Image (cartoon, rainbow, N blue to C red; front, side, top):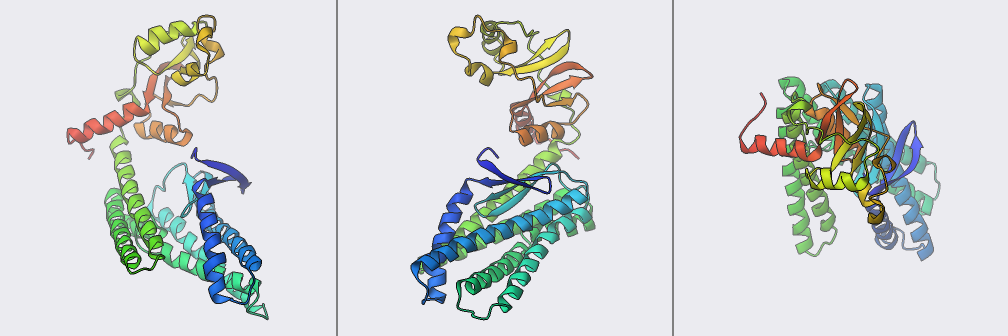
Length: 373
C-alpha cells in the first residue's frame, strides 16, 4: 500500500503501518484514558489514565500483529510467500503473494489467527492472576488486554467473509462442493448480511443516545464492503484465469532505441499513438521501459537534448511471458502498484499489457455476458 510505511521486519516479513492506524491509535488511547479506565478505576489520576491508555493501545496492536503473524507463518509453512503485514484502522492484513490452492490450507491459515488471540487472552489473564493488587494500572491494563483479545478471537470466528470465521466457512464449503467461486459467494453473502446487521444495530444505538453504536456501524460497513470487494475480486480472477496475455497485449508502438530524444518519444509515441509507456530496446533486447511519468519529471526545455536512456526505468523490469495468463499479469501490477508489465517472448519484447487493458477486457466480457466455464 502506498498509504503505509514500513516499521520493522520480523521473521523475514516487512511490518508496515497504514496511515489510518494513527487515527485509531489516538482515538482508542483517548477512549481508554477518558472513559474506560476512569469508569473502572476512579481513584487514578489523569496522568495514570493516559499512560495506561497509551500502553494498552500499543499492546493491543502488538496483539493484532501476533494474530497476523500466526496467519503469515502458517501460510509460509504451506509454501505461500508472504511479503508484508500491514496494520490499519480496524486491525491488520497479511499480504500474501497468492491465495491458498486447496481448502485444507485455507482452513488451517484462517483458524490459527483466532487461536493466537485466544492464547494471548489466556496469557494476559494468567499474568493478571500474579498481580496482588487488582486496582493498579498494571492489573487494569492486563484485564483489558485479556478481555479485548478474547473479544477479537470471538469476533473473528463469526462466519462472515472476509473474517477468519468466514474464511473457515469458505474452506468447509469449498471442501464439500469443490467449487471455490460458489464457496466464496456464500461466505461473502453471509459477511454482507452480518455487516448490514451491525450497521442497523449501531444506528439504533446512536439514535438511542449511545454513541458507542457508531463503532458497530463502522465495523459493519467495513465488513460488508470487504465481503463485496472480496467476492468481486475472486470473480475477476476467475474471469482472467486461462486467458493468455497475448489476447489483450498491446503491440509495441514502434521501435524506441535508448538514443531517441525525449522530444521525439513524446511526439511520435505518447502523442502520436496515444500510448503512455513503451519498451526501450536495442537489437530486440529489452533495456528498459519509459513512461509518461518518467517524462513528466524531466524539465521540458531538456526534452530535445536528453536521450530516452537517461530517464527510462532499467530495473526492476516486471514482465510476464506471452504464454502466461492475465492473472499473472494482474498480480504483478497489483503487487508493485504499477500500470503495465512487459510481455516477453523468450528474450524478445512482444509488447505491453496494462492495467487498463485488463479492466477493459473484464468490462467487455461483463457487457457481452461472457463467463468462463
